[in-house]
Length: 119
Image (cartoon, rainbow, N blue to C red; front, side, top):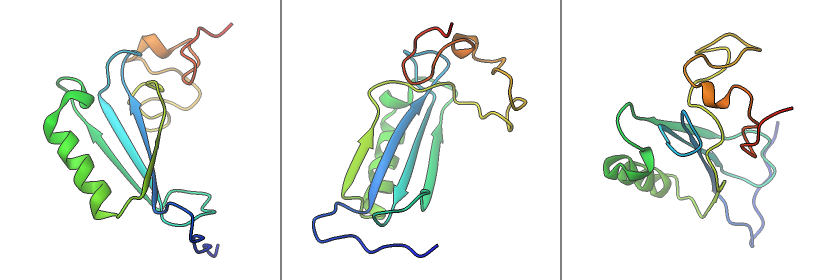
């Protein structure tokens, strides 16, 4: 697929920043996706930071790495969600497709975007 060039007013490259963790209060994974041009359907670059100790948002080393990563890719705008959007484990990779993560029971019956219990 051919990529469109950004318009003069567009703020590209643009990045998305998402946080994941075992609960809606604790972050163990940060993911940045970068779109270089307007109209991309998928991220051009995807990078993950994972920690087994502490909260990613409070880790100064990871914070510096994220800032350097954004500078390295000349990111002009960042979009982030206000909440943690699920566990750090990946369906189909860390646990079977169609099931819930056995390591993060908090998310088993919750909507990952609202945090509300599913009916």
